[in-house]
Image (cartoon, rainbow, N blue to C red; front, side):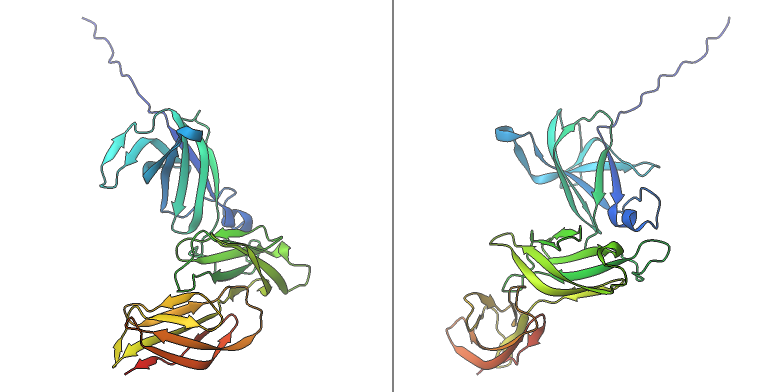
Length: 316
């Protein structure tokens, strides 16, 4: 009796989403392949479903389970990881969704109204470097195009990092939206500088999450080097009988905002980035304990783009 050959049925799972991510800094510098892939880890989230009045925000956002193939594409097969680590299948039904991409070395990227499932066309995302990005130590051209860096941070008066502030420089084609640390970095191509120009004085635009935008004038950027734009700040400590005092308030003459001491009695008082530079002024600083006791330090120096450490407030 003649044996029939065995038959096999092969099932291939179609991708629900395909992501084509590129490291924008590496792409512009030209030292890696034409489509440089980002450094891992990269995390993907669905943050909302639907559009208009039917839009539903996910709280918390749904983390997408991804697989990275040999071509460097990130593939989503409609698997979602819950906060307890369990995996759900088929969670994202046919609709439009808002997506967010996060990485340890990149600014957050977002896109709205992405249809799931897609028609198997890859979603292109250019990921821009975060302040944690592993920039080369040699900023000058070494087999690629050179660049300059400008770093900085924005804080609330009391010293907390200011999230969702946008920082940019006109003409630099570089902008940054801060996270909760308040830190930022801007990248300047060599083409930003005129021929034979080594230093360029720029205007930094800052748009806080609340309140009007403002400009920081007379900021120098050096071709092929890294600079920092310092914040204007005071810092110090409040102690009573040698012990740190938490919850004491700090007031600075001529400024309505107050700062508060932490558990170790330390405090920061940050001024707006748009302080005239260079400039030095002298102020009165008052510390008030929770029981209402006060001490005042007079003639304390405030120097633009610098942090001045004051003597401790010593309460008896």
